[in-house]
Length: 90
Image (cartoon, rainbow, N blue to C red; front, side, top):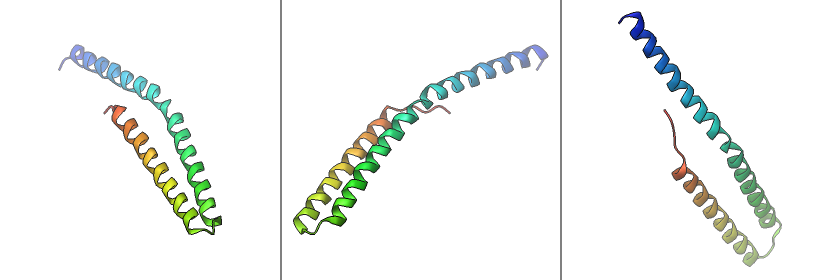
């Protein structure tokens, strides 16, 4: 390698890393959306748990359990959709 070839390789690497850094920063903004989604799920599950503990009726407990199953299913659907739409850089 001569100095000129090494310089070209270094410049190429700098551009590649700059592109990856820019992409990471742009996609990093999606973290806020994920945090909001998880906070909403936590609120739903906390409310359902409180309702379950305070309930005395078997039929009411069963209804709450079914609602929890529905909430977990919806959360998994959203998670999988987000995963399928995401792209990762290496």
